[in-house]
Length: 311
Image (cartoon, rainbow, N blue to C red; front, side, top):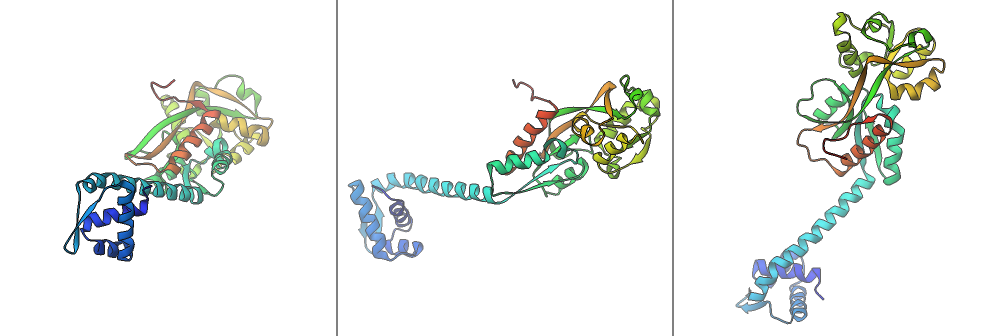
């Protein structure tokens, strides 16, 4: 039976042409290397080296064996690296970028998905707004993310749309929900809008500004807040109306504004969700896992966007 130890001693001897030099390289005593070579020759039933002066010369059989021995030891190294990588993956930190509202779709559930597979990992979900997340990607702080588009320029990034969620008009006034809200009504509405820090680049506001282009007006915000939960609470109190993704409305209205409701826009408007990473990047197993799980979570709530040619 051949052993890895024998093959290691064989290759060192073959390379150096000397049992003594092979022993020095491997950190073994010379008699130990000689014993391994004799054991290998006995297993194979053929001599592998001829002694010439103080050195050894490989036989034709040794020439034949050498590439096979190299492949075996290389495969062992690959296996060890793979195991160490998996071990590191299972006990390391997984970072993934998420736009703020995404926590309503995939926050705690996504973390639970990861920990159910890899209980030893540490998970970081990073980002408040898609603009910040893209900046983290460009600076290499994270490998991949789930963002809402359109947002700031995506130069140098690969963007793969995975789902879309309808934007809906929410109000505590039933008369505001009697019919879909078009551009003219939206232009006259007093709104509370979240994401005030990122108001210039927020994807929802970009969609609304485009919708109002024909009216020559911007959405009129009566109240500006940072988080969508506060916006929904204020809608429930009757201070203003808002426009948020339908998935967020379905989750937040029953809890934070039970007397409020929602209605579609006319024409219907959508936020697009996409997986994004640096162009041409080779993603780590951790990044690929997060993309898979986050996509699954998002597509369970929003309308899936399938790659062309799939299904």
